[in-house]
Length: 175
Image 1 (cartoon, one colour):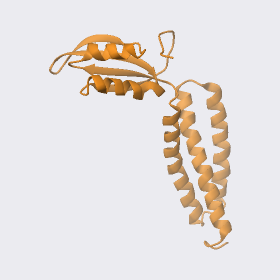
Image 2 (cartoon, one colour):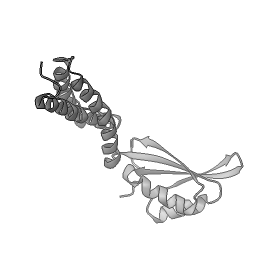
Image 3 (cartoon, rainbow, N blue to C red):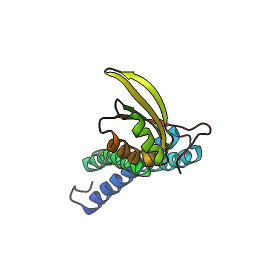
Image 4 (cartoon, rainbow, N blue to C red):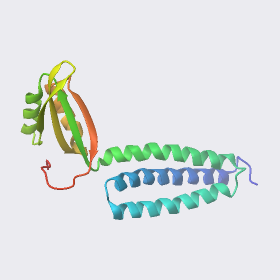
């Protein structure tokens, strides 16, 4: 057994870490595309993820006494989760259904969003303190921050929620 201070031991641990980060990042992206119904891409990502997983796990299991490999494996898992989430946020693939509840400025928020090219559905509602406007806006995920900024400028007290959306048929999508 090589010593813990051997360059080859550290190189092996580094490779395990990097491959495990890649494996978990692919896993996060694969789950994202599965939820969005992208079959071919989910197959490709799943295949790559499995190949990497088998190679990395085999490397760790060959020498369970090497604590450095075990730590690298665990650290790669944790880091890969975070990196995968970061990549997923940056790609912003898919659509969101935003629900905006405004007790005072609903029509103004709706008008401003429409001026910016978004389709808005308005519904009258009743909240704890009286009448509210409930606005529904379906947007591409990459546009959600812009919608949030528009709403905040018109009504800083508006309540905004978001749900993942999988378009089924027709409708209006801002280009």
